Image 1 (cartoon, rainbow, N blue to C red):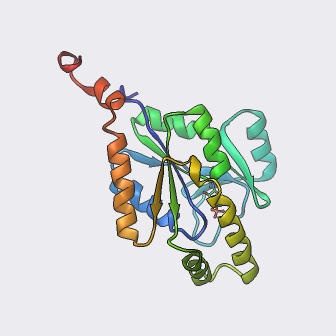
Image 2: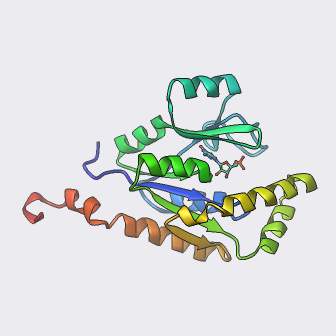
Image 3: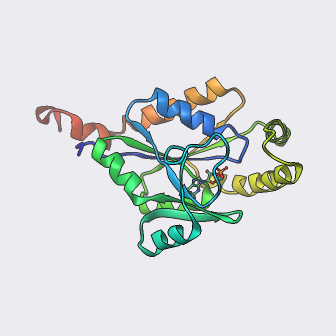
Length: 203
Ligand code: 5GP
């Protein structure tokens, strides 16, 4: 196990804010940043891979994991369950990695209670019009689904004040640069750098 403590980064966003692509690029481009693969009861989308995008499980198994206290946080969204297994955090600690959680507001609140030092970032869109357009361009979503996602987006936006940082995703590269700068700055906190310094250089 690394002597430098793991940092937990929480990223939330209304659906359509570009969170998934930003998170993918962030973990690909920043060393020692691991994506937390959540468990969910929702059905996989066409391009999703079990064990990579999510661990897809049924409701009975999810409920058994809740009973066993295996989740660091979990939430019910639409008619499905989503949760972060505690084992994701243990694995990150064992590898000396930081962990990136792509979760929604209720789960983020639970993480804040358990890990007060976690860093919470909210990604948002420049306008509701842009959000609607992005959701319409995703041809996997029906009109009814889009309306539901816009309503959910508004609900998600209500959680914004509890986040430490807000990144407006107008331009993907700029938003990615902002996310990287947050991660890199967090890694330079005294409490993180100090334990890694040679003993004769510590105060
Ligand atoms: P989707 O079904 O579009 O993949 O995700 C729907 C919402 O669930 C997104 O806001 C996503 O961030 C959230 N989500 C994904 N995994 C988790 C999780 O483990 N816990 C919580 N609380 N939310 C999650």
